[in-house]
Length: 139
Image (cartoon, rainbow, N blue to C red):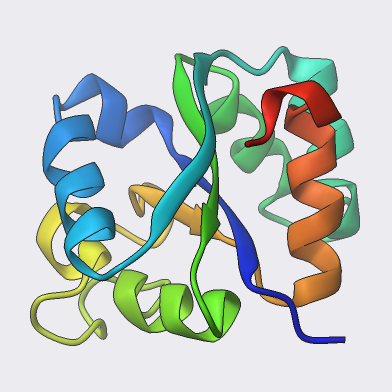
C-alpha cells in the first residue's frame, strides 16, 4: 500500500550541531508538508524498542546509546510518493556515498552519526509515526 506520508527523525548529532532549521528548510523546499513535529528525547528503552528490528546486529548497542544521548526532532511528512522521495532527499546512509545536495551529504559526519532517519517503507512509516505521535498530534 502506497501512502503519501513518511516519518523522519533529526538525530542527536543534527540537533547538537544546530542543523534543525537548515534541515527543515531542505525538507520544505523539497515540497514536503510537516503534519506532525516535536522536539523530544528517546530514553534507552524507547531507542531499544524503536530499533528492535536491529537488535541482533553488532551496531545495535551503539545505535541505542547514540539515539538516546540527546534530543531529536520527530516528524511526520506528507507529499506524494513520500517515502521514496524522502529517501532520495536524505541520501545514502554513508555520507561519503551520498549524492551532492542530500541532507546526509551536507550534515552527516559518518555512517553512525548520519543526521537523519527516514522510513524505508510505507508500512514502517506508519509504525514509526505511531510510535512517536498520538492521532490527535497529527494534522
